[in-house]
Image (tube, rainbow, N blue to C red; front, side):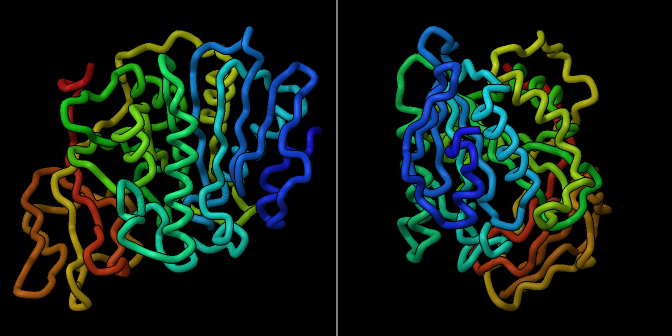
Length: 335
């Protein structure tokens, strides 16, 4: 196997490869760009016009997606997987991955779409570098652009595998892409209705890609991901890479759609969230439930029918989102 196929090993060791470019026996070029960043380019005659960005490890302790990308890279380096797409593999936060921690000083996935310019430190610099790498990769004209940012969650979920679909004013969500997600094992999608500061939102809003944050289960250490079943996603990614996707039924049957009702923003150290510490994502909350309180008698009371909570985290920094209230949605706005 080519040495550059061992990107994860290089990243964990903090090593820069001596050889920055290698070719497989089939003429696939692998090029090391930066720490945790590798571009894969098929021979020109096999290129089908897709640019695919696969990122994982934006949070360093979310290891199942990192292991998934590692397997795909090994298959390409051995010649077992024969790409027809250009691919950029990114391990987002190398230092946090080495430490087995979510982040070192600040959450990288809250530093995109201009936020890193308002901050400092190594993780703000890394967010800037990730934007640069993505912008360079997606700079070729007249090509299809697809980005999957792979995560696992810090808590359990009533819906284990789901996706978040970013928002941009004037741009409709794609039924075809939702059908592709369903085929990849996602059972729910949150259709967002405002711009965000996460990585997938940056590539969707600024670079014109079809971009998604994929939540694949609960975060576990390396080697302990038997309970995180990514088999359907792995198969679909191989098909996308090889250009062998079967025709997809676009009825979306079995795929639950949600929209954002409200975001809960933590404004001060007085913020108090009235939820059990072990509450799962997509837990339903009754109307009238006092969800959170903060300064100046600000209160978040559940007013929506069928409201559910995702990503509750009262420990975030002041000014950041401490949770999202979502409600069931329909497919009427899709194209």
